Image (cartoon, rainbow, N blue to C red; front, side):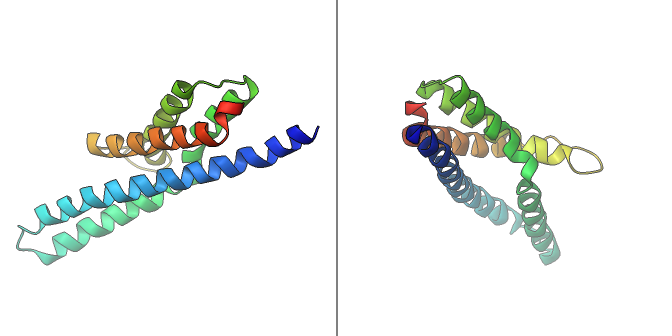
Length: 144
C-alpha cells in the first residue's frame, strides 16, 4: 500500500523532471537553429524582415506551449505504467514520438491553414523527446 502511494507521487514528479529536460534540450538546440536562421536573415537589407522572423519564432514557441501537446506523452506514460513496461526502448521511442508530434498537434489547434513543420523542427523535438524518455525511464520507468 505504501509503495503504491509512493509510486503515485513519484510518477508525476519524474514526468515533470523529464519534461523539463526535454524543454531544456529543445530550447538549447532550437536556440542554435534560431541563431543560424537569424544569421541567414542578416543578409537582407530590410531590418523589419529580421524582426518579423524573430516574432514568428516566438509565436511558434507560444503555440507549442499549449496543453494539447502533452497528451501523447501522458498517454505513453499511462500505458507504460499500467502495462508495467520496463523497457528503455519503449520510453525512448515513445518520448521521441510524443515530442515530435507536438509541433503537428500545435499547428492543428490553430484556426487557419495548417502548415507542416520543417524537418529541422521535427529533429529538434524528437531529440528532446528521446532524451526525456530516457530520463523518465531512469527515474521511474525501469521500476514500473
